[in-house]
Length: 340
Image 1: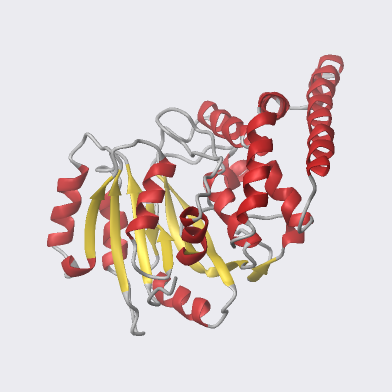
Image 2: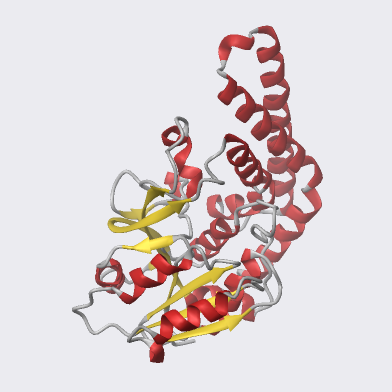
C-alpha cells in the first residue's frame, strides 16, 4: 500500500464537549511554513452530549472545513475508535491527538521535518506537559509517567529495543501502512483499551510492538510539545491506583511480543518456559511483598504500600488467568510475521 505523504490528525472522543474546545483551537492554530498535506478526523465514539454538533460548529467557524470531518463509531471503547480512525485516514502519518491534548503551534512543522529526514521511523512521540484543572497532587511528579506526560527517553532520536521503552499514543505519529497491513491480513490485537469505567491499558504499547516487529523504529523528540489537560477527577490517588492496576493487568497479554522482540522466531516451548517463569516470578513478588510488609509495615509509606499491593496482585493474577489468550496471541504473531 502506497499512501500520499501527509498527516492525518485523529481525535477519538467520548462525551468530550467540555474538553475539545482548546484541543481543536490548537490544531486550527498550527503555524505551517512547509507545504504539508493534512486532514483532521474526529471520531465520535457514541457520545451522548452533542459532541458532534459542537465539533461541527468549531469546524465551520475555522478556515479548515475542507480539511476536517467527523465520523461516528457506535462500538464504545478506545480501541474501536482508534481502528475507525485508522480506516478513515488517507495519509501516511496518523497523529493521535487525545481530546485533552493541546498541541504547541509548531507541532506539525517540527514533526514533518523529523519524519521526512528519518525514513525508518514507525512511531514518533513527543513530550506531554501537564496542565492542571485544580491543584497538582503532592504525589503526581513521582508517578506522572502513567498519565502520558514527561520525557519518553533521556535523549532525542531512536529508541532501541534494548531500551525497553514504548511510546504513549497521545501526541504520537504512527505509520499507517504498517498497521493496516496487519489488519488486512486478518490480525487482531489482544489489547482492547479503556472502555467505560474499565481502565485496562496497553493498546498503544501493542501498536508500538507491532511496528517494531515489522522492522521500523520508535523515535522520540523533545521538540514536540503539547499540553495534556489533567482534570481534577483524575487527580485522585484512587483513580491512579485504578489506572496502574489496569496497566499491570495488560502485562501478561503483551508478554508474547517481548519474546518476538528478543528472538526472531521463538519456538512454542520457549513461550511455555518463559511464560511459566514469569508467572512464578510475579506470584513470588506478590507473596514476598505481602510478607515483608507484614513483618516490617514501616518500610513503605501508605502510598507506596497501596500501590505495591495493587500492582503485584494484578500482575500475579493476570499471569494465571491469561495464559490461554497470551498463547493464542503468540500463535497469531507467529503466523502474521510471514506476511509483514
